[in-house]
Length: 250
Image: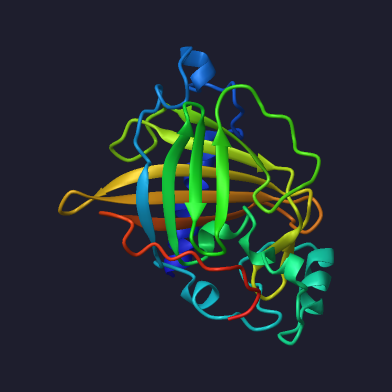
């Protein structure tokens, strides 16, 4: 029930936002003539910890083989997912398959968000020791090689959809290595496109909740968008920051 409610809310939010953002879209840094940092309508910086409010059995324990409920897989996606076995040992270079941009926000852990420069927001994840770079302004050229975190273009959505904040962050990520949407081999391909929306909501006692709505589109393995909403609570400092290596097993 919790997952149904969360996904329904996420779908409604995505539909309200309309088309996927681009770097030059409405409310972006280019529209205001300011840098991404100077034009920010909300402050996402700081340390955040996962709040597992739904999908506990997929996020906190290893899902069983063939358990891909809620993921709109194509027949080819089902075939690939069913090829996975718990005994499969991924080579070292493939241990980060569950930690790519399409799935990283679902892995329990902590985030550290800072400004790397005036037009680059840096999001570090202690799970898998991963880093995502969100670039504002001109669209960066894709790297020669796809990567787990891909190439991300960001813009501020000043439409006021972030609860009580007057804005949201929208990020589109492409140029990805193929990997897993879930640790039990549920696949996404190198053609996947990820759209993340970052919103803030107040909590009692002056706390803050970061809500990340992730939309994964993949013409090869998904029949339609795969939409999830992940929550993070702000922490006072980084004393519990605990980087760990990637692993395809627990």
